[in-house]
Image 1: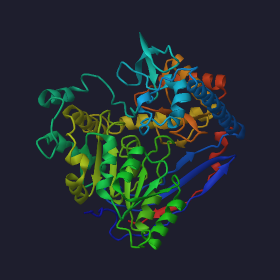
Image 2: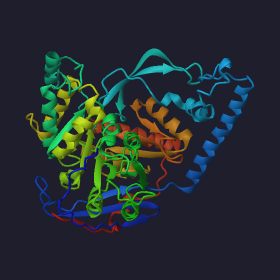
Image 3: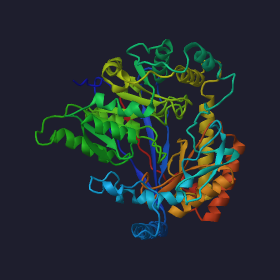
Length: 551
């Protein structure tokens, strides 16, 4: 049995959308102005709001050197595999025992080639153990390897007060101030730290219902439900919404949890180019005109899945245009706001507020409490019919243990702080995060780094490209007591390895200036300033179009 998602304008008004892409010395800049009329409660009339995203292409020599670097490492990998095969070098990875050679292989040797010969050489840059609160500064445990990163041992030393530029602590709620956490401590004394049951049995607490009502009020929707794990919020709820005979149109850069949920659902999945409205509309037209494969029957449901902020690119969803296409072709929209809820919008209500889109135009609103709220878990919000259906059909709701009471209270505390219900100024932390984001991005551009994403996104990817430079960058920054996250293939395209900075409202101007100072030095030392653009001369080159959505 499937329930049809309820949401959107009942009159299914049409909306025209278009875009202009301006290329300025191989810098692709998209600037959109959005015009709205009265669009429902809590939205009002929006002023025009510009949005700018940049995806500068690297010089040709950088791409060539990147491929060459991977090629050389791969050749050495084959050489070392040969040495292991003839017994001249020891292999530390799991292998079949001699008496198991006639069995079906448990370990696929070639599939581990990348891990064995490339990742293992630079593994010291990942999985670093920390020993403090992951706030704006943190402590890391020192470790060394005696066998070229196959194993590590702790030295007992600690790197104190390193600036944390990698944690998802957008609003600075990863804190241990006893005064701030008093209500969390009180709820822990009252309920303990675990529930020991699902909410459908005897694990439903009053604070769970309080949180769900608060989330619904915050998002300005009819109802919501919460889950103890953010990843499972996607992977376990999507199969309850769509199934065989349904079509999922998924952005090519969607998170793994969305991809897993789509695969588990049994629905047909088609992938459209990232934030490309022409690609999406083409697929919508084909889906409606052709129907299901072989039978050509109409699809039971067409679900568009997108994210608010894409965590590897730092780009924002083109929500007004997607909503317009959704209405035009009578599809449903699933919006994952894991990184955008609390982080963007004047009062932190995510991309719907940033673009002044009526929340009722989004059929399924999903988000997590792990980034902006300093907690754990996730939520699904929307129409009451949707939430009531999921309460009895979602695996995550029926079988999973209820959210821990102190985690629940932490989310309530953080959300009340964002809304100004605790006596603090509404939006104070959001404004600080926005200020830090714009300042940090602008300074990096001035220095000559290539950065991706939207000007409003607190996720700031800096392109490093070459595998050797990725490793050297992470090690150099740690030497300067700055903790960063570096990402490479297969998490990114092979030629687009990067460092990903996550800004926080808890970062002070002095901290950011210190990071920028070291970034400037490391960028010169490692030759990482690949940008060939002068950003002060480009803003006036943008062409603009209006998109008007009906009331």
